Image (cartoon, rainbow, N blue to C red; front, side):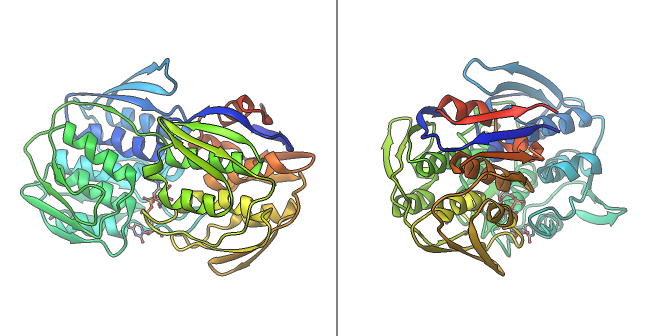
Length: 422
Ligand code: UD1
């Protein structure tokens, strides 16, 4: 298995370009199942979860045409004209939970689907009850058999659905299903993440009638059929935030091209509070770090609150800040695995349930560490950028799931980082 080696102590300087959003691209690619026409997608990031999605879609019978884009990432043509299989198998769903999002579109267009349930993962139980409850309210018959969800409905019917939690995945699955249902669906307490808005924008281009994407209440008027469309995926706000922390952490000066301030409000607020100098420019955000960050308290919340996907990265910054900070994780039950690895690098982090008490230390020191999930692994890369001596990160397949050529992007702005092939 590949490893990443980082030698810290270099100030990052220059410009880094943000890729297309992984979490927006995943449901958008899956939404191509809703039509037999060709869908054209641009600015799709070239990373493992996207390749898993393409494999999943190809396995269902979707025709996939890939063009490496000159602007970075991939341009894709997808056509779900002849669907030969209505089953998403465990092997794919277990490697990427977002595979479960094929359930809504397959059910809505073909009247049945058989999708493996994802099970737990490194950061918690992550059930899919809200996806299933919503589909059942739309008239689907749902059975759980041998680890699979078997769903059927001659025709889904619009319904009023209240989500107990504003789940991103459930909102996306139900929104897609509702586009082809009979009548009006109202999703209350819907997730409001920018990725939901982007999925909504792509669906509207396909002819869907959706109102309120990005708000608490999303209304969808079902139509008989959707058509092909062309869509550009939004920039990845989590990747952008990760680079911004890297700049702040190394006292650097980096222009993060593609970073959108309107998608990163709570995060930018906290980064500023920690002492970073931010200037929002046309096409991106410039970040200047200072000698030492100040400590800030952070609580992760559904959007527009502070994103759980940037919690691990901010913990690295806080681990060398001047003071004590309290980081509270409210979205996932087990998302502090990186804290234990950071402690091995000299950080002083104490865990108390869903709170981490981070006492800033002067510096970190390199160590062999292990990635446990996507965002935890990138936090170890960040720690490595700062640490004296070498940090060796193993299990980097977690990193490859969600970051496009991260070592190349970081070396371009001055980091000493390389990948060692197995
Ligand atoms: C998505 C993102 C992930 C991000 C997360 C929260 C993608 C591919 N992944 O994950 O990067 O960290 O949003 O911003 O977009 N829950 C239930 N029942 C359900 C569904 C969810 O209890 O049916 C709970 C989950 O266990 C979790 C919380 O709701 O505690 C939020 O999960 P959700 O918003 O669904 O996250 P994902 O869509 O899985």
